[in-house]
Length: 540
Image (cartoon, rainbow, N blue to C red):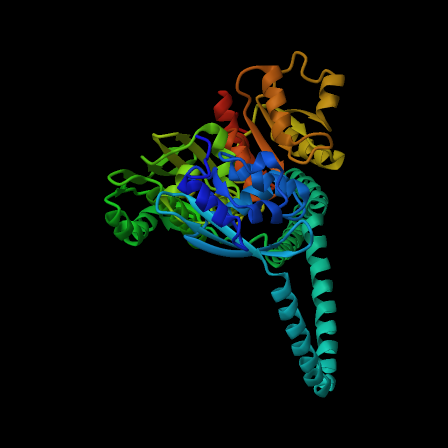
């Protein structure tokens, strides 16, 4: 209904126009109810943005596109600005106006969810504070002059320390970046030596071959130690996964959040489990804390939150399930964005919207997989996939220098793909000695160009991860697609990151780390052969 001069609302509007501060009132949906002339003038808003019903986001977006909110994506800057204004019951912030003046904003939430924003030009006050700061700086300089000699010594020490840190950092970066290239020739040497050991058995060269193997093992141990140090120095190995009982984590989580759940009349249930997982106890605890806290915050009174684990292949899936407000698929990325909160969630709980962003960062740092399933109005499920504890790994035990008697001869067709010809040659020699029919290639293009697979179907594939034109994982998928059916495969790689191992496990691909240890290689091949139905061996 249009306003009339005799309306109280018109009188109030007239009074607001004489207030020296800019004032605007927004409803619970953050749409403009009214604003005074000072508000419109100081913000230099066009007429179409001063009409009742205008969204606060449109006003913020206009300011952002004009450059008032700084450099960056205008829509993101607008969202961040609105989050700042609505993050608490009352807020006080400053920013530059479009004319270079300093504007101080006061925002207050109304009982019905609305918002009142008032602001004024505080340029004169800020300049006075700056002048006072300059006076203080002058006084500080006088004090600094009296201690110049001491500061000079400290500065020289700091320069020396910085040079030492830079040198150490360069070493760390070099070792981390060169790890793949450093391990490649060592891997080839280990494979050649393994073939030599088996062929020199019971000959005069047996001791010599074993000595070479021992020397290479020493080199590998030293190199592995250096690479581990470089990863620690660069922060890559900060997570420290250890065997842990998942029930301990659930029990601790229940103790921590039971009071919060009771306060909101929410049923918090921990499903008992006997699962043992490999995880960094502290960092995983922080992930679960954030997820359970969010679940309780955004579940209405009387709702339910459930935490438990399910076995999924070689991993445990840790679920945090709630009957909360949920969200649709279009909002999945938004919930992980910093300072981003959905409108309904913002009304239910205070916060800056950082909880899920922290979860995402921690999951990435741990090399884990995060899964999200949610329906608006029906609740959400956040899931973390955790490696199950593996007992009795062959790699954790010392390998015998010679194969055990009766080790057996493999009768398998093996395709080996690696971008290093020396590694292919060494791998072919070792596998051929084991009785395998081996074909090798430097790339998928070579396989296709030379028609290596015509009339010859491999029982399994040994694939390098770092190929010249694609990743080993994608190459295996290509082979499976073209050959049809399930093709047993192992990834042979110098990349020991948890992320690569997790990706391989997701696709049912075994992982063998370089330098390859013959016993571990043979054990993996035997396991893959069982998958292909060719698990029988002939006595050698």
